[in-house]
Image (cartoon, rainbow, N blue to C red; front, side, top):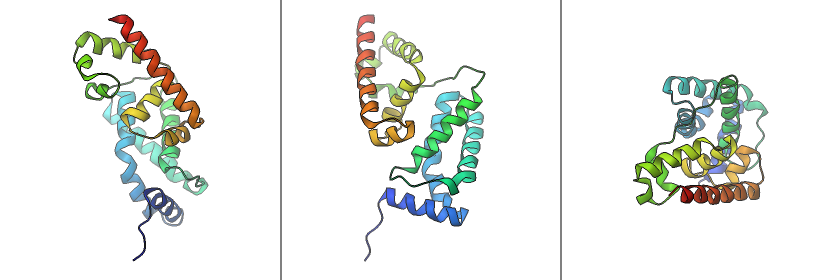
Amino acid sequence: MADQPTSLEQERIWIEKSKQDIRFFEPLYSKYFDALFRYFVRRTDDEQLSQDLCSSTFFKVLDNIQKYKWQGVPFGAWLFRIAGNELKKHFRDRKPVYVIEEERLSCLEDESMIQNPDYRGRLIEVLDELPEMDLRILELKYFENYNFREISAMLEMGESAVKMRLYRLLSNLKTILERHD
């Protein structure tokens, strides 16, 4: 019996097959659609717009699949770079929106503190003031559960730079929030 391919290897196979026959793209679409949709909803707070942005992102991906070069990282890295570009294009003349589900905040801080409405409100205010790149790193790490290697590929940053930026960000957030109490 042959060994089953790893998830990463399976993606590589689907990509190569998709280049020959677009019907093989369906497993990639199924694997990434929900995460991509959540990404857009958190950035737009609009489900219809998020569906439109998902459609345009997947259209761009399919239109450019022949140019895709395998680099040993999840396909999602390339997909989310395209999604980020679609989002930038949409918000070119508007201020971006970020939506953070309150139940997800517990991954950032102590659960008992999150229950305090004042603390929760302050946390949301502080997150609203973050630079887009910092918010993106937080989102990918704690809300989408990507590892540092995947995040670095998506953001085209070194893995150590992502780790350092996240460490500093969390440290700064903690200091800011403790000062508020």
